[in-house]
Length: 286
Image (cartoon, rainbow, N blue to C red; front, side, top):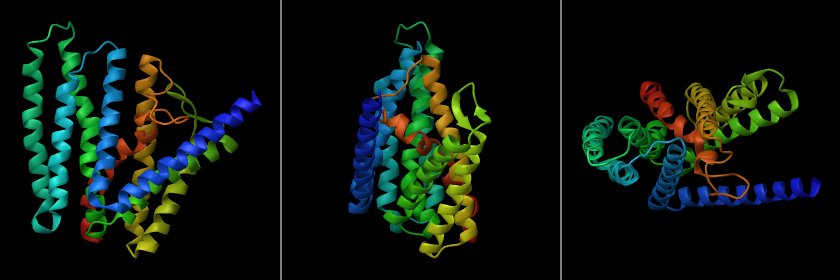
């Protein structure tokens, strides 16, 4: 048993290091490689999400969902590449997203007319939910540095992702050593309030440190750490809820010892929209 645990730990460590190198390398290499990274995270997560839905008895329209996700990401990435040439970028992004969903929703309803599955409402809902849950965050994540420092910066985006990971690691370490009071036993029996506050403190501290290194407002960065922590925990619990409904341990096998895309990036999927809105609201103070 001890040998198996040691082997699992070694596998998790190696695959974790490989993932870290891939993420850092893709973000630092170029805007195109950064876009490819988040597109892969989006598509991989969406495939796993639709697989979970099918295990639960739904029949989402995979092709429409995936095509819609790619179209949404492509539209957002085009705006991202031409950031400096576009005025009133926030308004244009929201207008593009509005037009996109105006087409996605009715198209999904219409396509269901030609299918013969007995759960049309669940099929439509799961198809659209997958796009909202996974594609929308990945379409917005590349804009985080522009909103935070006014220009694209791979290191700023890495800092934001690192804050989410610090929250996860701090929560785990504090929870393992001091955790006694269950946070949400029905969904995730191992999570504790002690771990929750440990992660919160770790995330805010990391955010303040990164803000200091970036020469930004420590108050804004500290608030970003707070939002990242709260939404990151919510993302973790949401994914646990989805897996518990269909009784699976891992969403996929993307990484040995870490599970699938949903397992590894669950916090990021939920955190990005909250961080995006937070930065819009505090933009005048940056």
